[in-house]
Amino acid sequence: MDLGTIAERVARSAQLAALLEVSGYPKPGNVHRTADFPDVRYEHFLAGSIAMGSALRKAAIDGALAGKERIKLSGIRIGEKIKSAVQEVNESHYGGNTHLGMLLLFVPLAAAAGKTLVETGKIELESLRNNFTQIMKSTSTIDSLCTYDAICAAIQTGKGENRKTAKSSWLGRAKTDVPSLHEREAREKLSDENVTLYDWLKASSSWDGIANELTSGMEVSFKVGYPTLMETFEKHKDINISVVHTFLKILSEYPDTLVARKVGLEKTTNIVKAVALGLEKAEWISCVAKSILETGGLTSEEGKKALQELDESLRNEGGKLNPGTTADLTASSLMIANLCGLKF
Image 1 (spheres, rainbow, N blue to C red):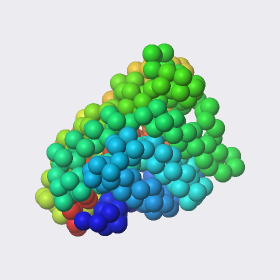
Image 2: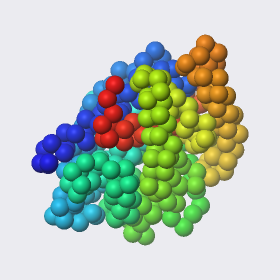
Image 3: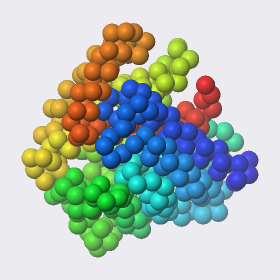
Image 4: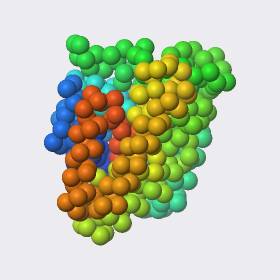
């Protein structure tokens, strides 16, 4: 398989995953095809889903080159491609930070997919996951600095009154040996202390779902999200039901850390304490998601009604209770499924 074919296959799998994730409805608390936020529309997510393609192609190609042993794993430059992807998404719309968490997951997964396709000629889950872990553990300090820049660029996007700054309160602070993912002074510390991207994310993994996913070999995506998606699709042959039920399954088992952080940061700027304070609300949402699945979710009238009520309830909080981490994990599960040949 030539590099161009690999790049296109991987990028299409990621872009389709992003499109399917945001189109799934009603995913409670998220922007979806029938619900916007005041400053972020469904169409902003569509634009960003297409714009990310170029950086993902490059990640897949460099992953493939690493598989051919033409470059080292560290030469994939994960951070550089995350930064590039965020910039391309930002340039595609004025809707603010639509895809940061997703891109943090998609870029190394794209590189892992490129490496896997070169080595085996197909996508095998075990090989894909092993390559993902190897790539993440081979990251450098430069990857950390570029990823920090990407986070700042994502936060600062938007237009007019919707524009935020890199010092927005959601960054918080954490007192650890390694600067946390959300610490304001992180860039200087990362450089001075020569912290790799993997080690930086590991320092945040106990309170940030995306950081945990990136340092656990995508545990949630491979072990919960992907199997749920495929089992649900096999049973119902409906991609929307499959996406929404995958979202609910992940949410029911893993309280959303973005929700916990937003709730807790209203009470403290310490990110660890904030997540702990907000966890009660996040766990309540998880319990409701579990009960909705138990009543049939989108396959029963009772489940549909409960799902709509939860969506409206979370939306009434102005985005504070938006399970964004769950959405990103749903998207990465979809990308794995697409790489494995999901068709609907």
